[in-house]
Image (cartoon, rainbow, N blue to C red; front, side, top):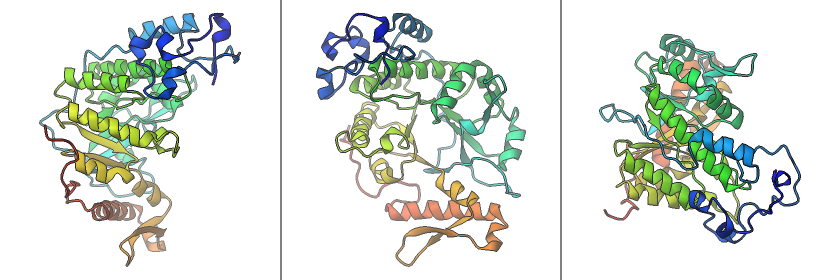
Length: 376
């Protein structure tokens, strides 16, 4: 891990109890609390460290001032209109419209933020399509399609969006989006906790900017500790009309580590979070196939964003269900390869039906077993 303690002769705190920002951070929840998050800083003399860390007082002060204080909650949050049509349990992700000559007639689709932007020659992020008609034409989508933009991207794109957000957000508004998820700024496990708290606070500030631009926001449940989850609970308590949240399992939560079962810990925290909201939250889940049964049992409704059907289609693969009931992807025949639009429609339909059947769900994605949440 990088460090900037060379610039500050004071030794780092040896435990969470000694840390000056414990009230904002909350500290670790496990045995790491006795070591703190700075134990790897001593002896590391990388003066190029850019973590938001008290050991670098100039950068730390500037970063904290930028977000209005560590852990400061959003004061404005525009939610999805409660009168809008309910989101389906399955939402296909569409990355582009290349090789398709026919309009995809899905009512709701997801488009990743990085597919809507590009870096210009000055290194600034800018929008590719400046009108809804241009976007629909480029992605071969129906005029009635509700578009959900997901902001789960690599750091380069997330930070580029943050730097250019005041220019890009008004332009995104012109695309007639259904909603947009808040960016998931990185929580690095081996970095100082102050950096993660700062990144969560950055998300809160972006939520305000999205709201000011007139975009319906889906907060991202990005959290490392109980304190992080408590802040999220406070946001949903402050804004009772907010009924959606974004969760993703494709980055840190996709790592298998027997000593740090992040996925199971995260699910446990989400159950507590859902109970604190009275079970009102409709999660929008990315890369969560393994957890369909879990969400079907604890949520009144939920949505799974699926990128698999699209990715397989552009690689000329076809979904086939075999005699054992399992879905497998096979190379599509030459005739099917000539009609990419039909192949995509078929793959979406097959994937949707297979996931329902495999998980024993009803047609709306609900579990047929009782809820795991305690009765209110």
